[in-house]
Length: 448
Image 1: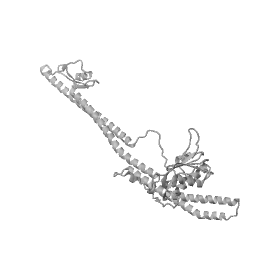
Image 2: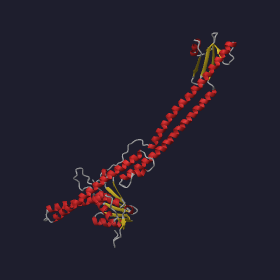
Image 3: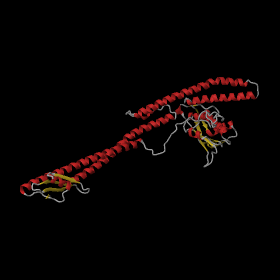
Image 4: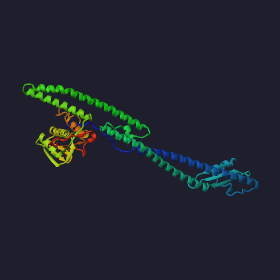
């Protein structure tokens, strides 16, 4: 493994239809409003229709009773549409009348106005009946009522949808602000508070969620800080005995055993120094000492001093304001990583504010490309690989102090294995003075 990043928050996305809470809430309110509107419309329409039919049947009964009295007194009905022994009378009405009772009936033919029947028995054994239709005026009233109910239902659904969009939009906006603030916290912005980010006067479950996230972030921050302090303390305590061990090893008589002891002691001292540097970078207290340098010339001179066999190609020279010491640290770590894990030739190019370091090895591991460098993790699964995984961790940390961006990718032709790894350092356009860095007076006769 080529060094190590901090693990960023992994984004897990489920494949499928993605809809916001605004539209879900709007759809739910619209559905409920539609169902309620339809139910109320049916109830109101049926109640109005039944009431009108009852009124029409009562009117028919009154007329046929009045016709009965006139028929028994004067021998004639004196009312239009009153028939005697009408053969078209429904059988149900006829049976009731033949039993000596007054009867009425309303029949719906499906198309057209309903039929209204009213009948009474006369003293001479005949049956007086009245056959009429539901009034056209009443039908028009029902049609107007039906149209009004439909329009009202549509208005209710649209109003419910608008209300759902409004309420859902406010809730969705608060959740989006909370998510954005949580992502900033995950990227290491310790001053961000989710509760302050969402704002608002109304207190709801979103505030409870924000407070919980803030509390979790505080707890994690305290734990990480405690772990960083422990790591720094251990490394600091190891520095003195390791230095003493190295001094003592140098006093041993020359020979192969002495060389082995010196080699391991130097490796241990390097490890302790690297751990201390990582702890300082994790503490976010490092500040850059800024100078103006010509980037191409600086990189060419530093690489030539490190390894004359590495070719530096300056595509476009540019003057930048940065910390030369930290920039050199990043550059040397990238070169050491390429030499240790890649294959020659190692190439360095400078184009404006961008530095690229490429080797022709098997490329970066997929886990590093996906998650970034991880300390104490190498490319060997059996822990027998070279290096301790701190090189790229330190490079990434120093790049953050410089306000720069460090990316990794592989040169991979279509359908073929990787043909090299490329680390790219993107220096900022403006000096990172907003991080607390401060300018340093240039040394006399020096440009970097």
